[in-house]
Length: 196
Image 1 (tube, rainbow, N blue to C red):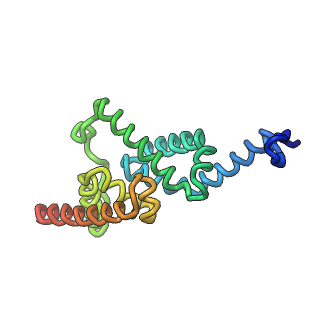
Image 2 (tube, helix red, strand yellow; image 1 turned 90 degrees about the vertical axis):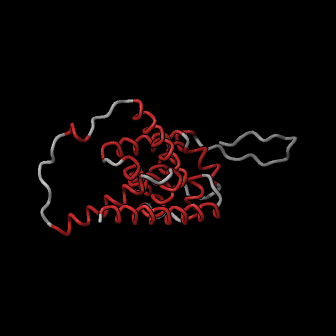
């Protein structure tokens, strides 16, 4: 089935793809995108919200929104990877999550009650303490620096992908990461000094 040619243009008609075949192709391409980036989107969401349940919800919302705009994103990406686009969607949804969460009352840790039991291995406790200290310090970074560090070290994204996800230039992203690392080092050192 061919498109009717416009006699005035002198162009050869392009074959029309049946809508069902185009939809099937688009769905298959989206499935490939989903399989390739599910772990990255989930990891990003988990680092942002801090618990598995909300991270799963955020991941689901990210892919639902991505599916709605997938065809346009493919056209506009000009062959570039879509991972930064997915992370940007997750970033925006996480911002909405925090904005909505700030409007709802939360239960304090004191009201939650004691923990059932802690692991007794000293090395595990030390590692967990170190990790908690670092994550607390990451949480005190400005949003853009925290986002950049999560993308770089938790997701393994390169500077160009981070730049696209944050809507910055490559040079600005490199500076942002450098400053984030230096600030994090300072915060960790200050906290270690305070606890010693």
